[in-house]
Length: 320
Image (tube, rainbow, N blue to C red; front, side, top):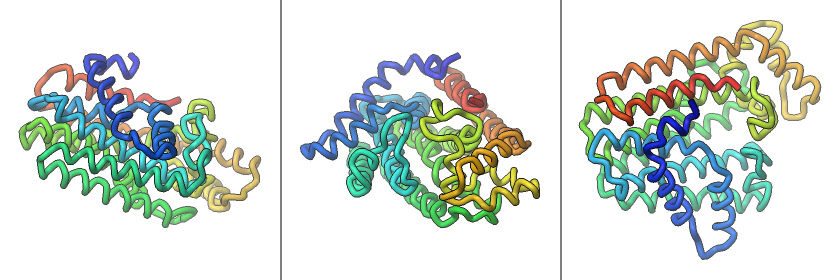
C-alpha cells in the first residue's frame, strides 16, 4: 500500500494546506518568494501537516483552525532544512539545487529566517496559549539539536545517548509537536493529547534512525544526494556508532575527514553497509515503532487511528 492511500480521506484538506503554504510565503520581495517557493515546489512527504490533521480528528476537527498549525510546522521544518544545507554546504536536496546553491549562503540564511518568521505569524491565528508554548518549546529544542550536531562533527567518541538526544531534538520533538498541536487545536482530551505526543515522539525517533540507515543503503538517485554523505560531513549516526563496535572498522572510520579520498570513502561505506550495524539500527528503529503503536491503542477506532498505524508501519519498512 502506498503511503498516500492510507490518508486519502484527507486529500482535499491536504491540497488546501498546500495552497495555504504558497499563500503564506508570498512576498513583495521577489527573491525571497522565489527561494521559498522553490522549497515548496520541491515537494516532500508533508508528514508533519498530515500528523496535525490526523491528530485533529480525535477532537473537534475544524480545518479553518487546524490549518494554521499544519502550515506553521511545515514552515519550521523547511526553514531548518535551508539552514542545514548552508551548514553542510549541500548543493542538492531531493534531486534539485539547494537555495544556497542557487542564490548563495546569505540569501539562504535569510530565507530560512523568513520561513521561521512566517511560521510564527501563522500560528498567531490560533488563540490557544498551549499551542504557542508547545511550538516555541519545539523550536528551542530544534535549535539545540542543530548546535549539538555542529559541535559533535567528526567526534567519533560520542555515545549512543548523545546521538539519541540529538535526533530527539532535531527530528522527533517536531513530529511529536505536530501530533500534539493537532490534538490541542481541536480540543481533544488531555489523555489523548499526551498519547498523540508520545506517538509522534516514538515515530519521529524511528523516522530519523531509518533516514540515517538509508544514507548508507539507498542510492544517490533515491536519496537526492550522494550516499554516505552524513559521515563524510562528520555527522555520526546510529549505523556508524554500531559499526565502530567492530575494532577493525572503527580504525577505518575514525580517519574519515572532509577531504578523504573518494575510493577510500566508498570502501568504508560498503563495509558499514555490509556489517551488522545496519540490522542493529533497524532493530532499534522497530523498538520505537512498537512503542508508538502501543501508546495509541486506547484511542478510539476510526480512519485517523488506522492511518496513524499504517504510517508508522510504512516508516518501519523504508529499507530502500
